[in-house]
Amino acid sequence: MASFAFTNAFVSVNAVDLSTFVRSVTINVEAEDLEDTAMGDTYRSRIGGLKDWSVDLEFNQDFAASAVDVSIFSLLGTVVAVIVKPVNTTTSATNPQYSGNVLVSEYNPLDGSVGDLATTSVSWPGAGTLTRAIA
Image 1 (cartoon, rainbow, N blue to C red):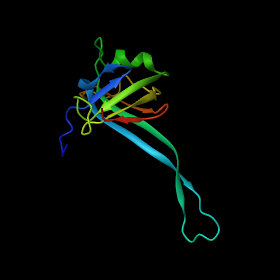
Image 2: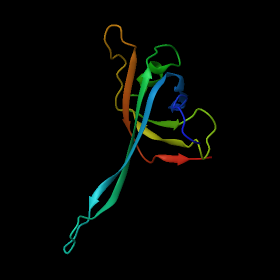
Image 3: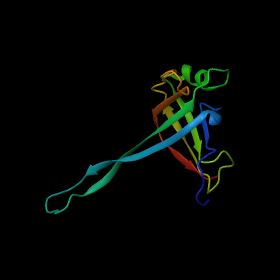
């Protein structure tokens, strides 16, 4: 896949496809930076430690059945599966699927001022391994 406009991502939370409500999605992946510098070294040396990940989602808020609020509100405090793909189509080498469990640690059903578009944003930490699949 060459360059593309990010306009049709797939996002599933707890096996519910919320793609049509998603305004933005970010998967954050990092490894701890462990310094292993020893006597005699003249530069600092580092190795990678434990990995961590999280997902940031922004939704257009919707309180209808099978929409954002009813799908997320009851999940607060639980661990659920999240699946994200760049394009809402078949998983492939050019459209990888990222999946893993997250802790639904926050949810703000209402956040805005008069005249604003009703949206809600969440940032959930990974609760285990993030996998990348191409088939």
